[in-house]
Length: 219
Image (cartoon, rainbow, N blue to C red; front, side):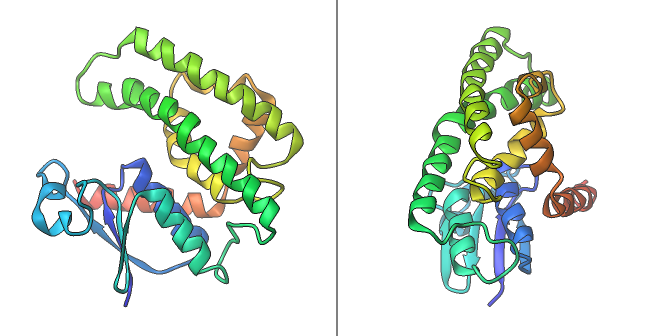
């Protein structure tokens, strides 16, 4: 049975899974979920994700939600396909797991809040809250200071090769690079070089092409 990914293509968590699938060179079916129409709150969708959020994922009779859990499943199950996104050594994998938690617990809360304030709100005709923006810029800056030190020790956050850790950052960073928050990344040389590296990956270029196609389809 084919892999199915349910979501909306503009969602960073959905794009996180799409990027993983592209890195692993896996075929899949994308099932668009119309959030504006409330499709994610309908019984058929809640059967896939009881929280009514995207993405949801199917691989045969397996049903998953939460993007990072999905990418870990893909990386472990299809380890022989495409890019190796996990590390075989247990100690290296443990270090990688630490930085995956850092992304989820430290980086993402600040970055997603900034994205909402500076990207999403204007699109919805809402005014950016400058006080909130300043608060989360400071918070993200502190996280990036830690990243700068880490990236002096290894080429990527999880180790010496590209892994799920780096992949998980890509969608939200891509959004922020088109905003004034880019200055936070540019001010840190190692972070800036790392971002240039991960955003230049062929798999991400394929995701961007898909974005263009899907956005044209959904107009």
